[in-house]
Image (cartoon, rainbow, N blue to C red; front, top):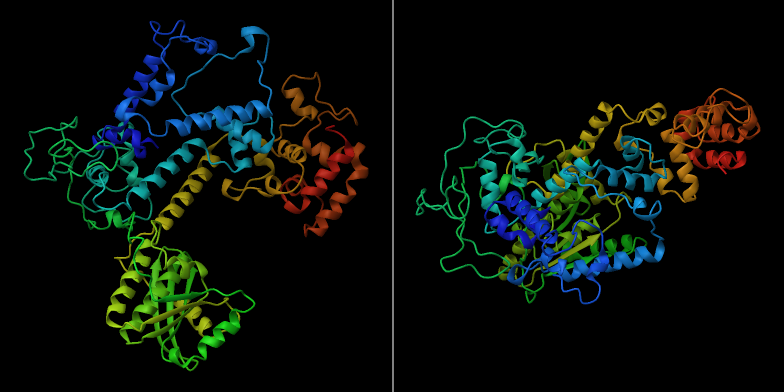
Length: 611
């Protein structure tokens, strides 16, 4: 996504991402193909740059000059050199024919590189090139190119929503939320923020998912971000927008005197300014490196000694009145955490923490956080927290820029404030294996499961991890819809009618030889070296079987009916019974069941049909 690249930061601040990038690409193309500079610029003649040619270096045109030169130029050049060197080392590259006729003509397209994407699927499955792209994508578990690009865009926008309010792109995102595009096909990448799932969309703007399809007639009233700026004054190229943004650019040269002023529109949004669309905030830096450590001891012993370590801590009388067991749970798509105070083996207090559409790790961290907070309120200076989540124990001590950072910051602020009042404070967090009979751990597990049935608080921030999980789920559902509407891939549909999200992954991740996996993929897509397919491609005059004389040598005939290979089919039936499949073997069972993978390949080798 070009929106986040430092080279195009000026395009971001002026909100002319598409126009500026397209103009820049046209300018570079025109300079590199100038007939006055390069003789016959559209011909592939790399020798023109050998020796003292005196021609401008195309690299300087591509990467820019002066202050605005791309900072990643040398990284890109080194990567291209290594790619070319490794390719020439491993492969022999030659024209498909003789002379210039063997060099394919260059073709340009404004659409997605569907052919290149199909080549990737062919490389994974080993299928024929005339197999349909839809079938190859499903077989190779490759998300279609349009969905893959949209998924990458939505992931990037979800990360933008977690940026601090002082970031220069936040006013532009608010403007994209408040004002729909004039035409849906001219929407900027920021307008796709309305397609993000699991966010809290404001009620005073058009609903989610309708603005990119049809432009609303009632646009929100323009409200300037800076009341001191007159609406008639225009900065940059956005003549129809009001307001200014004066945040200095994070990279590049310093702004001119008076600050960099960029006009934007900020319509009133119901979401709080601290949480844009309810998404959690992620701070780039929270603590300086010289900050004092927290008074926390985290013990993650080996599984073999974890029980003895826990028993030793429970025997310590300093933790007698402040031992908390925490746990997280996920039931029916609802996550929750819980904390239980256990004194002398009996529960004294229970905290239920429903999180709604979250993750188990979030429930674990929330339980540890609230247990520590409650123990401090009770006046304890020696606190023992027992959890069965190593990720939760480590996550609360890491304030790095990541999802769930706000809980680690709350934990850090809580303990630093408590240390000022209680200098002798000591917190011990210990890990214990789950479901090994520890009474406190089982109590916390029951409490966490009960918390999943409660409604989550409305003020709970949306986790970046949960948003990305919803994006991936949404893309898979759309892929299933595309697969149902597609009229291609008949050969694969005959044996496998499962949706793309439930594909047969075992062949391409198993230890079977690559050539054998390719044969299985060819049989699954029904594009193989059997005579029925070769006849469809007009490679042979007849589709009849060469071994038994049947009219068509299809995959069903080869695997089930050809009498020439009947002596090799007994192991297939035995393997089917061993895999728990009753009845006679059929095409679906042979080409779908993961436990019949090797027996089918052995059958193919015994016949020698594809040698």
